[in-house]
Image 1 (cartoon, helix red, strand yellow):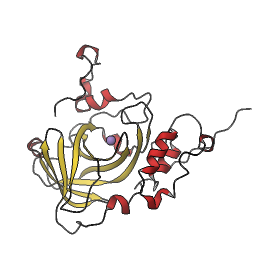
Image 2 (cartoon, rainbow, N blue to C red; image 1 turned 120 degrees about the horizontal axis):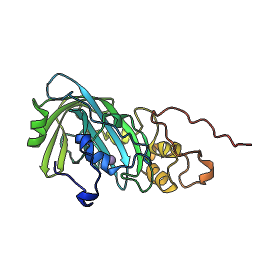
Image 3 (cartoon, rainbow, N blue to C red; image 1 turned 135 degrees about the vertical axis):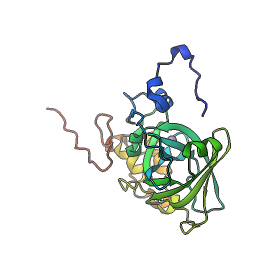
Image 4 (tube, rainbow, N blue to C red; image 1 turned 135 degrees about the horizontal axis):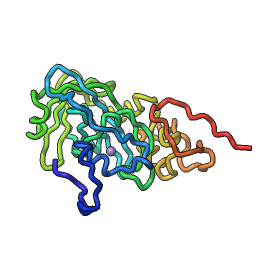
Length: 261
Ligand code: MN
C-alpha cells in the first residue's frame, strides 16, 4: 500500500522506520494524549497457512463519520479496513471497505473515546471479535492480488467472506452464500459491545467524551437501545469526572472521585 498522508515534509517527520508496518499508525497518533495503545509489530505469525486461526475484531467507530473497522491478524499486525455501512450478512450486499493503516495487535482490546482534536477522535466499541482463518493459500499474495477469501469465527460474524479490491484502497466486503448468510441486519439486531455489553452512548458517557462526542455516539446506537443511554446533551456535571483516563479493559468500574479536604 502506498504511504498516505505525507503532507508533512520528509525532513520534519520523525524516523519511525523501526516500527515497520506500524510506522503510519504511530505517525498519526500522539500517545501521550490518546488512550489508544502505541503497540509494536510482532514477529512471525503469518496467517499464510490454512487451518491456523488468527485474531479478528470489528470495532464500531463514531469518528467524523460512523464506520466499522474490520481487522485481521497477519504477520504481527492487524490488517484493517473501514466499512462505512458495517458488515452485511446478505450475500447480495457489497459493502465498501476502505483499506486503512495496519494496527497493532494490542488495538483489539481498545474500547473507549479518542479525545477531540486527535486522529480518529470519537467513540470506539469492540463490536465483534474472535478468530479468522484465510481461505486463500497465501495471504500476502491474496492481498496484493486484491482478493482475500476468509472464514470468520466471531460472536456476531461467522462463515465465509471475501474482500475484493476495486481500486487503490477501495475494497468490497461480501458475505459468501452459506448457512451464516441471512437477511438480518446484524448492525441493528446486535448493537452492543461483545466485551462490555455497553452501547456507544454508554461507552462515551463512561469515558468522558465531550458533549458533542456523547451526542454523536448515542446517535450511532439503533433507536431500540438509545433508551439505555444516559441523556445525551444533559448537564456535564452529572457525568463522571476525574482525570481523562479510560479503562483499557472495559468492564472495570471507575472508583468515585474523592474531593480532597
Ligand atoms: Mn476507524
